[in-house]
Image (cartoon, rainbow over all chains, first blue to last red; front, side, top):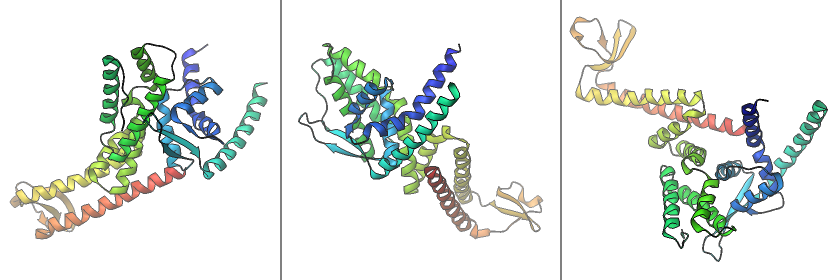
Length: 111
Length: 196
């Protein structure tokens, strides 16, 4: 077994699916960054370098897939909440469709 | 922005140092973007340090920061992205140079753009050179273009300067036009990338 190859491959897969995972987690939900990471970890057992989430969120925002708002907290340290835009929601549906097809193809190939 | 207050000096110091590194990494960005990034990371650190089971404040903070990552590495794509956004919006040459330096790793096309800008800036250099040395000019031999720059021993060559006093204004117009065109093409490239 080539462990280095597997490690690289896993990291590529993670990198390639992170946006899809984030959009799915945000479907019908509003989360702030730290919470979003917690949810991702709980649902997927994917350990992400937490800091990399923020450049990704910036990109999703630029693409108009998510929007954000600052919400004041009693601690005095506000949270930045992210939510899907309508474009984001539609885009996610399209991505899910693609993913289902991909899943089917992969299943056919590995049996 | 409200800073987090820690009980121990050591944790306060580690925290302050981390924020300073974020500020240093983002210092080329507009103030509003810098603030946004700093506030979001501050919020992340705060939420991380209160959501914990361990009792040691220092260990706790170190664990949060360790998971968050090295600011210089984590913020690099974010800074590069925002910088390019700003540079093509403002046409400001300083922003452009910073953005290109940050994005140089993103592919060969940015190398080409860097060379184009370098070419444009060498035009500015020629204008300044013309002020100090009147032998700088655009030289033709007969009908054929030969040199844009400085010729030594002008008396012994068959070269003829064609622009005369028009050298500086002509160069200025050419530079500005090239600069605008190159930046517009860069903008177009970003637009196309964006669409893909």
